[in-house]
Image 1 (cartoon, rainbow, N blue to C red):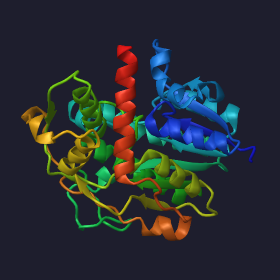
Image 2 (cartoon, one colour; image 1 turned 45 degrees about the vertical axis):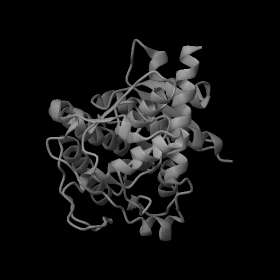
Image 3 (cartoon, rainbow, N blue to C red; image 1 turned 90 degrees about the vertical axis):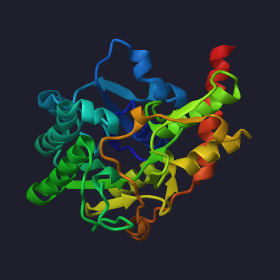
Length: 328
């Protein structure tokens, strides 16, 4: 057990909740930064779901408020800072490109600056994204693959990624980025396609819905479980030298195959329920993402432990349980 302290921005999101659970299990003091909301219970529902709300010190903070971030870091003096907060929904980034640029891009610089000014010895983690590869320049993407972002979200993430490298090289911060490929779980938001699918499958199985409306079924992604991926984040922070790592399963699967597996979990035929809707097509699609995580395996000793099939089953079962509870 350790007596370390970690600050996590975006603590109420999927990754923030699972990372909090991991760190608490290792004896960390966990201070989570979250935007103030008048609906506090809704904001902490992921922490509630994991049963750790009372163990996480949630403080008000905003990525766009440098002074507030400096105060938090100064008061807490963390050993590790994980920047997981962002406007993270790709579709929304086309509708709100300025907000996305500010929160997902400039917000990262504010966190880096707060660490540089108030706790320069802390280890910093930046949540980079496979979306930065966009229009892929290599069939399998690694740390050396050129980036070609295809959405305002991806552009903002790329800015954050390079600013993290710049702070590492300019100021000597222990600042690492995890280029995380798609990672899901029962805590994923309903606006994301994987959770949209598993929730719809659960509702259809329970007789609460009759169809699933989808966009591009042929896009392929490298999907892993968020619990595995936050473990990779922590391993990066334990290294003597900061660096950047791809975190992926080295396996790519189409949206169509993901949908088929979710329906198969409850013994239903997807062809009877799927409707293609042009409203769900992206203005600029990222057709293929397939990660090479050999560096994380060789340097961090990290390998994913939860299979795609196990993850899909867990997500469908969790959504079934939620709807049964809501209808009880």
